[in-house]
Image 1: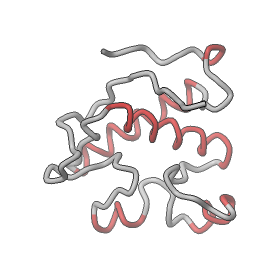
Image 2 (image 1 turned 45 degrees about the vertical axis):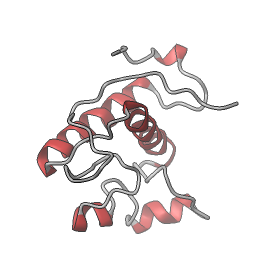
Image 3 (image 1 turned 120 degrees about the vertical axis):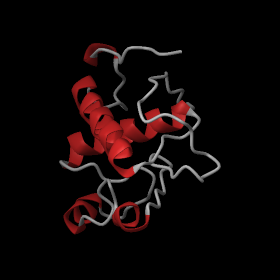
Image 4 (image 1 turned 120 degrees about the horizontal axis):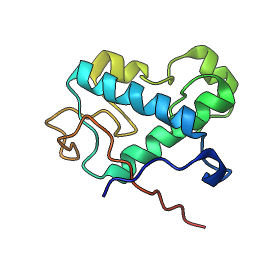
Length: 123
């Protein structure tokens, strides 16, 4: 089921703006096509990762990998190692977040375009 992105007024405080989300969606789709990688077969994983990248882009000025813990996010952004696409992805096509998966990965889907789904956050 494909849903349109929520308007900014509808988005919760833990979510990025629809403009940031859309920018990261476009980047992710283009990068997947350019690298021959695919999104996760579970679209909620892809949506959550793109949401996290968009939120970091807004807060930190860079799409820092949302799937890692950082003592100092600002220092990590300056280091650029974990800015998406991170060094492991660029060098070895290894995506810790499961956003960009090689076709042989058991979690890889067949899509390089985002199927937008609601993300349910545990309270």
